[in-house]
Amino acid sequence: MTLLPLPAFDDNYIWMLHDGRQALVVDPGDEQPVLQALQAHGLQLKAILVTHHHADHVGGVAALRAATDATVYGPAGETMPEPLQRYADGDTLDLLGLHFTVLDVPGHTAGHIAWYCGPHGTASLPPEGAQPAWGGPAPAGADCDGQPLLFCGDTLFSGGCGRLFEGTPAQMLASLDKLAALPGNTRVCCAHEYTLSNLRFARAVEPDNTALQDYSRQCEALRARQLPTLPSTIAVERDINPFLRSRQPAVARAMQARSAAADNDVSVFATLREWKNQFK
Image 1 (tube, rainbow, N blue to C red):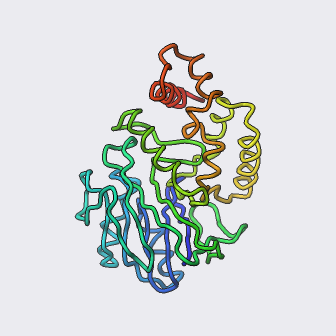
Image 2: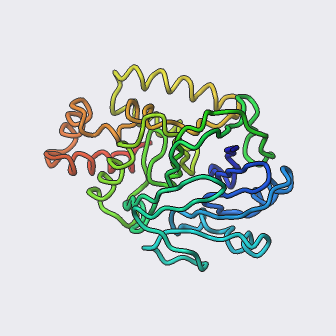
C-alpha cells in the first residue's frame, strides 16, 4: 500500500492511499491533483473519505464522483454539499484491504471526524527527497512497514491544532486527548503544511523543550528543500505539540502567567488556543 500527499491550494494536502490498481483519497478540496495522480499511476478511484465540511476539504468531491463514480464516506453530524455514506464514532469501514475506525473529534467543527487505520501489513511513503513542492506530480512510495495511519483533517496539526470555529475548548481538548492516546507510531496525516509556524509558537510556549528544538531544525531543513514535514507521528506530537502538552507543568505555568482564569485543564487549554490565535 502506498501513501501519497497530494499538494493542493497554498498549503493543503490531499492524502491518497493506493495498491497499484485502486485508490482512495481523503479530503479532496480540489479535484485536479487527484485526477492527475490517478492518471499518472494508472489508478481507479474507489472511495473518498471526508473529515469535515469546509470547502478546502470537500470542494473537489462532486467532480471526482462524477468522473470516477467513487463512493463518498463522511461525518454523520455535519451538513455536506454532496450525498455521502455517514459515519460516526466507533463505526468501521473496510476499503482496499484496510480497516478504518471512525473517531468523533469535535472542536474545529461540530461534527468533525478522523479516520484511523490500524496496523495493516505493508504501506508506503514517498522516499525522502522525492516529494515536489505544491503543484508537482506525486512520486511512487517507499516501504513504511504498515504503521497505523491517522487522517485527522484540521483537528491535529504537527505542532498545533485547528481553530475552534464551531466547537468549544473542552471539546477540542477531549478530541486531542483521544488522538494522543493512539499508538505512538501512528502516522499523523493532517491536512495542512502549517508546521513551521506552529513550531514558532510552540517554542514561545516551551523555550526549553529540547525535543521541540531538534524537531524544529529537522522540519526547517525539510521545508528548505521544499519537502513536506508530514506525516508526523503521535509520539513526536506528544513530545513537541503544546496542545497535547497543556497539562505539562511548564505549559500550564506559562498560561497561568498570561491569565488568572487559567486555573484548570480546560481554561489552560483555552488560554493556549487564544494566544495562538493572536500569535505573530
